[in-house]
Length: 389
Image (cartoon, one colour):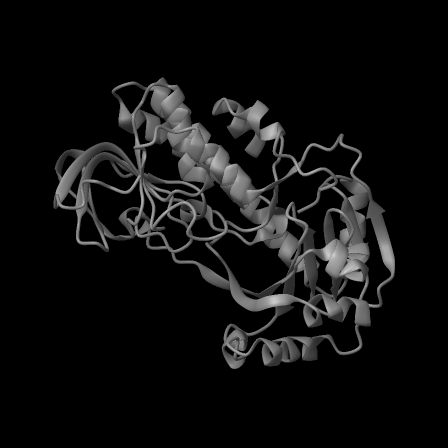
């Protein structure tokens, strides 16, 4: 599936999608079922080069709607992680304030991100994806066409260019000067492998689904994964350079540095870090400005994080990316031979939808890492029982 055209300096593709994440693949799939050929360019060397992250809750009105448009809904149902919609909310002393079990009737079933990506990949013709294509720049040509250059020295031209290339998009500068900004929250990610047998006490603490413990502007967010591991996000409200002060090449020392921020918290909670397996991985949380939009530019648009990067605290990022891809694909199919009308229709719907979700995400961040996080979350769940992240 590697690009066989690497010896050719430039090749034309009518529809070029930069980025093979869930949004870009959903777009390619919806176009495919509509009889429209598209090519996806992804920076990874192959689909197996790295794991694709943890569990995702797929929302009925966004991610599930996108999968229906892609004619993959029935296959998606086979990937659902039983018990994944369970929810547990705990305070820093380990007291459980909310425990909801997964009765199988929720509207946000959990699936493994990697399995969902594989479902989309397998639904496309084998020559759709060009692997090992890291976009390094893009420029406007005449008549609404664009040229994209890649790190391997090749380039392409295209009639319709879609930036689905994430937070630090190389396509976004064609339409917008906006850059992601640090939100004030930093993550350190760790894993407890084979949790039920190797870490039974931690598995009992977290439960079968999503686990939240918050207080004093920090906390633990954990997911029970489909492979039997527990993925832990240790979140701290901190200066942007905080993670730079920790040597993550020394995992033991890094754990101690992070745990120093949780002095006085229950030992069972601290053990989510102390007992973890493998490396501790730092990650700063960035977001584009709420309400990010651009003036329509001929022959180019954005979707997913490239268009509306937001913090993960409303659980909307992957869902919106997939919905973006489905809606853009449908707009193109509904406007045959009229790309500009298709892009205009898509963007007019995209902007208010993404602004509403980004507003919710920013508000959730402030609530979850504010002074009264625990009570705020309890109030939220009381008014929206299934509003899990």
